[in-house]
Image (tube, rainbow, N blue to C red; front, side):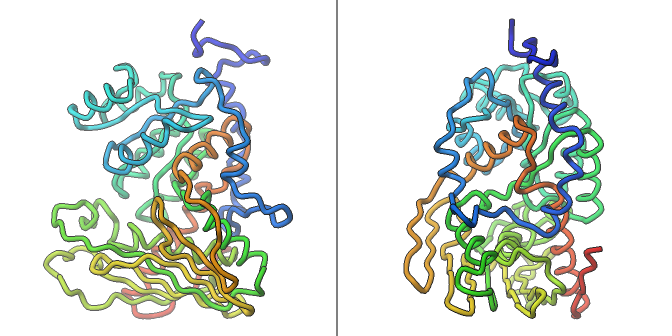
Length: 393
C-alpha cells in the first residue's frame, strides 16, 4: 500500500490528517504576526539549529513533500539543494513555465513526471498527495495569486519575501489560507540563523540594557536592464522590496515591538535610464515606543550589508548580516562564536514541523502582512515627503 493510501490511527488519510491538524490554528497567528517575533528561550537560550540537530530524521515515506513554484536561481540554487538535507520534508514537485527546466530538474532531482506541473496545470496539484507544501518562489506580484490557488488546492504554503506588493493582496493571502484551513509561512530564513537569533535575545531581553538606536542596510549593484527586479509591475518596487525588507525585519525582531511611525526619502537617481520604474536607493527611519529610532537604507547602486544595534550598556553588530553564509557578529564584549548554518533547510524543516505537529509558525502570514504595511508606508512617506503614522488597531 502506498503512502497516499496509508491511514493513521484515527482513520484519516495522510492528506486528511495533515489538514485536520491545521484547522482552527490560522487565527491564532494574529498576536505573534503583528507584535512579536520568533525568540530564543531567554532561560536556556538554545539556538534553533541546536534543537534541530537533536531531532531524528523522519523516514523518507513520512517526510512532507514540497513543490517549488518558479525555478529561478534561488529555488534551484538554494532551496532544492537544501531539501536534500532536511529532516522532515523533501523535494517532491516542480512547477515551471519552461519545458527545458522540467526535463533538466526533473532528471536531476528524480522527480516523477506526474509531480511536474506548468502554470496552466498548477491547480491539478490539489489531487497529488505526494505534495503537502507549496513554496512560492515567483516574482513578487505573482505571490498572491499562486498562494491563494495553493490554499484552494488544500496545500500548506511558504511564500517567499516580500509577501505581496500591496496590503490588500497580503490580507487576501492570509484570509484564503485561514479559510482553507492551511498554514501560511513567509520565507524569513534569518529567524532560524544563530547570529540573528542572538540579536533577538540581546535586544528583546535587554541583555545589555534597552536598545537605544539601530541602523541597518542591505544593497547590491544591479546593472542588468532585463532583470524583473526593476520592472515595477513584477517587483512592486525596487531594492526595498527585494533586499530592504531584511533591514526592516532586523529592526522589528531586535526590538520585538511595533513601530509608531516612519519617515522616508528616495535620493536623486544616478542612473535614471536604468531605474525608470523603481527607486534606485531609499532611506527610512522607524520610530518605536520609547523614542528609539531605527534608520535603514537599501540600494541597487551601492553595496553594503549590515545591522547595528546600540544599547545603554554596549552594542551588538552583525556585518556581513543578511547573506546565505559568511555572517559575522560581535558585541562590545567580543565576537559572537556561533556557526554559519544551512538557513534554508532549517527554515523549511521548521515549517514542516509546524504542519506535522499542529504548531504555529514562527514566521506566519500575519507577520508578512505586518511587514507589507510597513513597506507600503515607507513608499508613501517617500512619495509625500512626510511622516506616516501607523494604525495597528
